[in-house]
Image: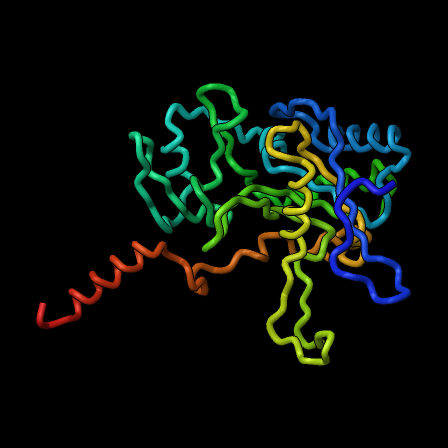
Length: 286
């Protein structure tokens, strides 16, 4: 049964079509601190498979939102002031912009996970009054634990797990989901050293596989549909079998670029102000 997105690119003449299928089971319960997330996810996938006649299969990737991982792990904290929670999770301020109507300023920061995002990933939506939701303490570890539990329950050898969160992007309007945790999936597809369709050498192409999986899953999960889990099928070539560190892979943390190597490590206004200040300190005429 085809339940999702369609092929990427045109197939060669006479070849089997490339196909990516993505779906999100419904009926997922509200997650609370201390819940057994692997059981809840496993129950939802089993019920969906029984209803559709299409259970989880070897090579599938299970995608879960960081929100349900954080809730299960007790990352709901009391915070009368969300701004203080953002400050507590901030390692480095990248950019700050004033907002109208007396709202607190927008802060783009690097958080404890090395991720650069608005508000350090601190979420005040769909949480009880007076609380905020922090990102999982170690999303890769969360993905590894969920993968191990689902493999054992479902009897699958080749299975991937991706933990996602929503982020903006430099120079682009709109939000998309990215992978902040991953296990059992090739994080990147390194095409360097190969050739393109015209035989030209590829020297810089490294595709962020887990980010593309995260973005595809969000199209069927939605933001307010009560579907925090999705399945992506058709990427078995990127899904690993077995258990242990080699099978789990390097995790999504390996995608985080060190700030020292980041060409956009500051906002434009901040970089300009720093340049002016540096010039004033070094120009003897000033």
